[in-house]
Amino acid sequence: MALRMLWAGQAKGILGGWRTICLVVSLFLQHPGVSSKCYFQAQAPCHYEGKYFTLGESWLRKDCFHCTCLHPVGVGCCDTSQHPIDFPAECEVLQEAGTCQFSLVQKADPRLPCKGGGPNLEWGSANTPAPGASAPHSS
Image (cartoon, rainbow, N blue to C red):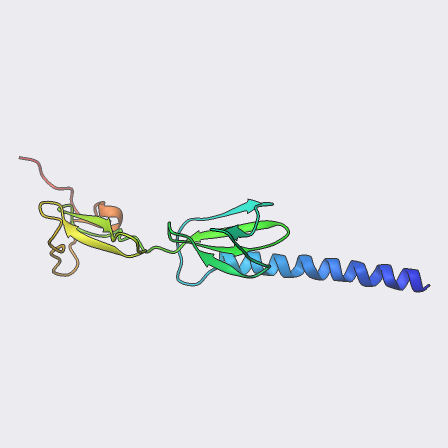
């Protein structure tokens, strides 16, 4: 009887651990404010740049991915950078060196910020024509 209760307690502990991991994974995949790339590495070690992390701890990599230790099942990471997707064709996106920040600059002179005067109905998400807008005419 005592052995049965001990086994039941261990099983409950194992299931409780898996429930915690599943909860962390589901919360990780629903990280608020992040609509970027996420991935999971099964059985990946929880270390980065010589530092080791335990279950639930997280770190920010140099490439702007926020990673969370899900030991013993692996590591989950999401891109935290916010990339502009709706801007005029004469502008481009530049990442500021050593940061997870981006600037919208003029292609003709990247030292100058992108000129924007509010919404432009000729361009839409990812610099594509907005729904219902007529395509630009070529000369």
